[in-house]
Amino acid sequence: MKKIFLTFSVLLAAVCSCKADNYPDVKYGPWVQNVTETGFTVMWESSLKNFAYVEIAPNDGTPFELCDRPRFYNVIAGRRIADVFHSVKVTGLEPGKEYRYRIYAKVVENDDSAYGTDYGPERRASASQDAVIRTLDHDAPECRFFMLNDIHGNKEKYNALVNGVDKAVFDFFLMNGDMVSDINEADVLQSKVFDVVPKFTSGIPIVYTRGNHETRGREAHRFVKFCPTPTGLTYFMFRQGPVAFLVLDGGEDKPDSAPEYSGTVEFDAFRKAELEWIRETVKDPLFADAPVKVAVMHIPALRTPGSWYAQAWLNENFVPVLNDVGVGLMLSGHHHQHIYVKPEECGNSFPIIANDDTDRLEFEADADGWRIRTYDMSGTQTHAYDSTTIE
Ligand SMILES: [Fe+2]
Image (cartoon, rainbow, N blue to C red):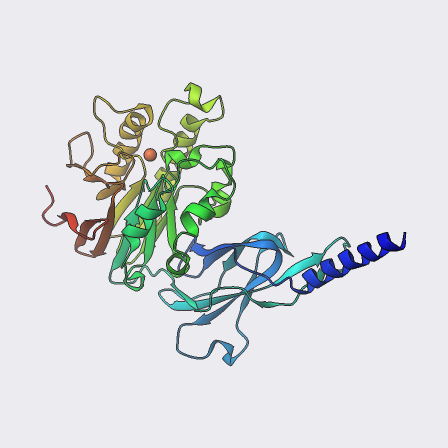
């Protein structure tokens, strides 16, 4: 009996000692999405349940600790949430300004009581360097971003395509769908997209267009949790400088009745609702008054005799509306090859560019038009377009 008691005591001491060392960490991330003119959302995942907050400071050269900085928590309906997944919405910022952020957290050691929680020591949990994020600004003279698509979880390709990119010159990083092949495991986006180059992706806003492969898998409905947007949907509009963006979601590529989906999808209804949303959203002066209008959609709304169901539907239903509202360019992926569709080739009054899965597409625009360059994994330029000379 004495021996059992001693063993139990040793085990208890080990557990207590372990708890004393329960420092918070960042297992995946952080990454930033949902950037607007006045805020952005910082997300990360920790190994243990943490109670965390994000501190914000202007990127003005002052020491971060100079004064009390604004703190933001993961708040749902008035409650500050402790969890392993953290989604902290930062608000109250100014357009076109750079902000540093830091993550502080403490491990939840015992939350069995509804009237008091035990925590481990609080400490800074983010990487050693301060990440910097610039908010959007519709008055900015220019807009710059770069885009990858169809990476399908290939980390070597992902690394090669972002290697050497100076993120400071870009307003955001556009992931134009099929960054993974499915979301069957709940942490696939974290491990294969947001944590592949964390020092890079923690310091630039991500705009993530859902591709058809991100609609697949038993956890695919969690995409909206990991990729918050201003609308709370997988389609949304935003403006940076002279460019208004319609980020669209073409859904799955085959009919809803295709046996691969096992009765789990209803993308016909989804696309129809999205089309109605487009008709309303384009009335917003932020979009209507933009000198440059770009539609972003993983599945290009082109049409060939070989087009699959969704592509043909998008061409037939989305394109006339996009033509009417003055869209000047569609950026897509999906085909794993570079495709350029001239205006008027299949009912489109704007060019459609489907980027190769082995290329990085760089975009820049001012009020006079846009310019695009694509680069392969060795950094060699592969294609170039200029809106003023487009055919
Ligand atoms: Fe695709």
